[in-house]
Image 1: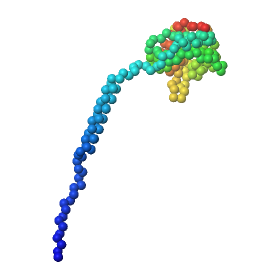
Image 2: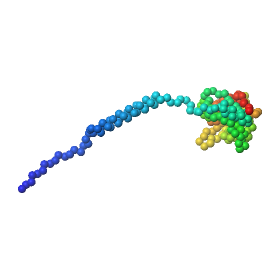
Image 3: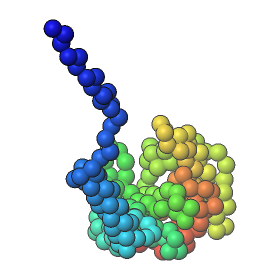
Image 4: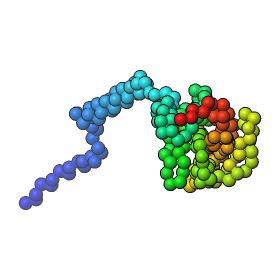
Length: 200
């Protein structure tokens, strides 16, 4: 007896079915949520105030000067400079290892460079060498009618070379030093030489 032939089955499609139902809605909701969060972050960034100007911390210069005067071993010099000169450090350096006591002021200059003032009553050659970053006398510079010796030093590591102006006065030695341009160093030297000397 002849068996009936089976009918051929239609080929099944392998094309991906379009996303339907909750899966598609979930992706769409995620995109919307991210857009809302991004908009909120942008608004907060624009509305929250941010600090302006310099981040230099205030320095108690009068307090440091009182400490130095109370020690009684170093003259204190307080130059009068413009508001664009920001004090970054002020201290009395204690005498140690053969170095005399010293008075130090550090500044951030208007050009955002470093300038410092070092003062000592009876400095040794080693003190001047340290204050000028091992500088070598190179030339002289007239400042307020006085002749200052200009020291030049080589950069240390990744640092910048330094220029120092040194004035050997009657009862003190002033050293203006830093990576600032010469005009700013001269400005600090002028203010330092014009400032009254507070003697303990």
